[in-house]
Length: 449
Image (cartoon, rainbow, N blue to C red; front, top):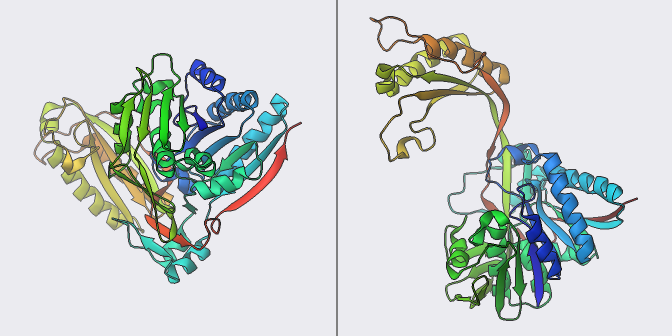
């Protein structure tokens, strides 16, 4: 049996300290925690930076280093620094060095870097080793070379190679959320289907329980399946909460693709062992003929400036769509005549359909509507200039030429906010590898006083 302790869904989110202490008391064989996600958009991969504050990450990582020392087991973090780029791995390593000095701990650290060079990926594309997933965008050699960061998602093979170095801590670049949990159980001979399935259920900590914010869970893996036990005092796992997590961030609730194959839970059986624990068996791992890893890439999408105006006049609110359509037409026409450079202008209605746009099922509009202007351009000075051209339209533009000039509210002055360079995801592809370690670099170092 292999016990994996998951403190929370991601480092920086927080967790129940008492729950973590209970988990350590259970004698885990490894502590695993996710460090990132693509949930908050392409900025973090584009820039190679973390979404979470350094102070929050350091505070929680300190507690996990102390917990690891008490348990005397490896500590693994996947997708370090939100995006898993090489620079984010280095950032996490620097924090660990600081903490090792402060805590007086001597630690062996293994890093896994999963960054891919644009030229290498261009050659892989030309050699037919990069293929699209469903709904993947069109790519080219030039697009691959234009990416500021490309990462490959590591699986269990890369995690186990790092653990085999005897590291106390593994700081991994981009990994699948499941790999850091499934790796050690698979290496120790646990049921492959159960290992991958349990890892999927545990990827977000206590999200698969009745108390998601408690964070910490323990999963026990063996030769036939896995058992999940929440560590939060009030938390419970039920067949419903556990089985439902296969729907989380997954288009098919029965199949999950991972490096080297896929998980099929069609035949899985969920059994409540008691009021808190659930036992799962019957999951199946199906190895593929070729070994592939998913690629994620981001590149510059230009520069952006946003403005915000608030509209409360009932007549304008009632005719808000006609009003912003007229502003878009007139402002774009004026800006095209006065600004030398490419740009786009979009007006979104905050309080109407800014999130879903034409897919919004509710036709109602609130009594006050925020109008957000988004100018995206090839250069920052162009985005700022067009946003300033937009300014008087948002403040004073009338519905018709035969009426008095209105005045609306800017919540701050100036209303233009430069967002700087923005980024966009541009890959949804897989890379074929002859050897699982071909696209990854594992290095070790010792830190401490």
